[in-house]
Image (tube, rainbow, N blue to C red; front, side, top):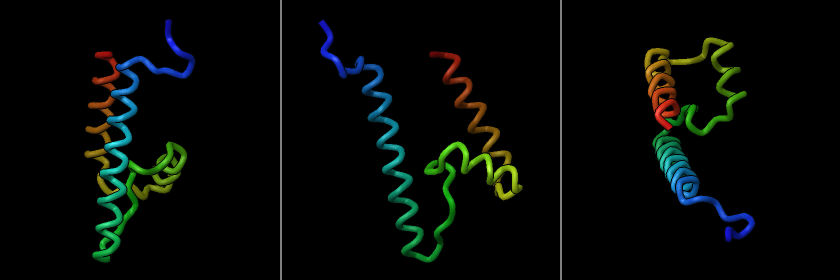
Length: 79
C-alpha cells in the first residue's frame, strides 16, 4: 500500500535528475559571474521570463533554442 506523499520511482529519478541539472547550471552561472562573464541562463529562468526575453528579441542563439525544444519534444513523445 503506497504511503501518502511517496512518489513512484520514475518520478523520483526525474526530480533528482532535474535537481542535478539545476545545480549544475547554478554552479556554472556563479563561476562565470566570479570571472566577470556572467549572463542570463534560460535553464534557470521561469517560463514567463523566457517568454518575455523572446518577445523582446533578446535571445542570442535561436538555432540552439529550437534544437533544444525539438529534443525535449521528442523525449516527451517517447514517454
